[in-house]
Image (cartoon, rainbow, N blue to C red):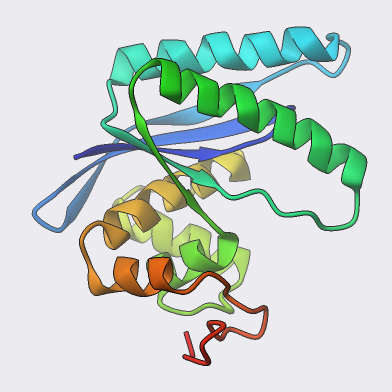
Length: 181
């Protein structure tokens, strides 16, 4: 299975394509789509869409794993990221790619086995699982590869069933049903 992982944004969109076969991961392509801050926002969205479609056509993924949007402090930034995420989802949909969303906590659990893992731990485990010489840069690229690994880990596994059967994962590392991650 060929999976594209996406770390959405409007300044930087990280992407990573992996092949997952017989329990092994093979990195195929990864990088970042970057937009210039001086560019009008609608043009940034168009650029993200066009560049991502080019990646999709070139690498022909079977499915997409993308970070589920959540609001933290800056709502203005969150709205802009949501708009960029919309064109990313549109690019996948227009190219008949199935889409699955994962929270950062789900990615941490799938990649490291620990819901409270630090970002650096997730990035290092991503590097190890993909047998890369170094952690891909920018961070958004490593995050996108981790997203793809998460999806591969969850495909048809008990973990997928657990993650999908619980609507909420609390910030303390427990599912809403009380199961510890």
